[in-house]
Image (tube, rainbow, N blue to C red; front, side, top):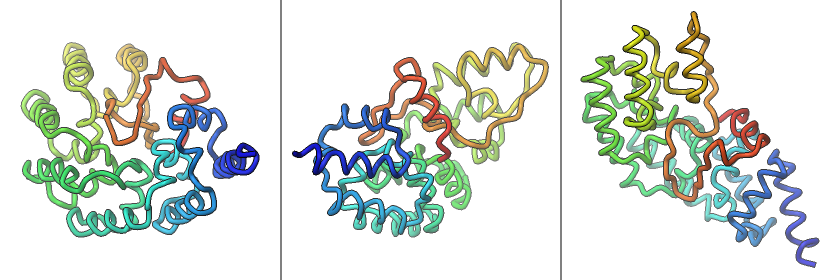
Length: 260
């Protein structure tokens, strides 16, 4: 009876929003308690709430897949509080805040003191507040980074790579990659070959694609659409990131094609 009266309507509703059944199956396997969310009293009102805060219809599947718990939170209060905070402290307007939630919905549950630590670090490096705001909107994962790791990556960027801060503003995802396992070894390969390129060109790709780029005789166009998870494997609230080796073809396709 419960399957027919509660679970099936919930699944049908989420499928109607654009969530693939294979993604839902994995989501329910990892967080079975989501099946207990009341469709009419909690789930639908929260989806309506997301849209009322400017989340685009086409972004809803990505938002829910990244942070399924968002369907059961006291969402209006959380979004209202965070939107006000982002506008007051980070100078990010409601439209920018909506883009942040689309790219990293866990922000709704992130402590505001935690949020300010990486922001204060960037401001302390002399980056103008308006540029920090642009960086956060483009890559909200910055707000979940440990400042110690940010410092190491930033100082390597300035002292070893000698690049202008403008490049960091344009590609803030740089700070989300592992310094030791990705940034340093790839940059050293570029140096040995005398290649000068953008941060995105040598970081925002798999190891295989990086090797292909090094062997190529031209620099291919960079994608303007980020993949499902940008940068390194961040530990975010309620987010269980998986490696590409653990994903099915359908999941990889979905992760790479849903525009954030």
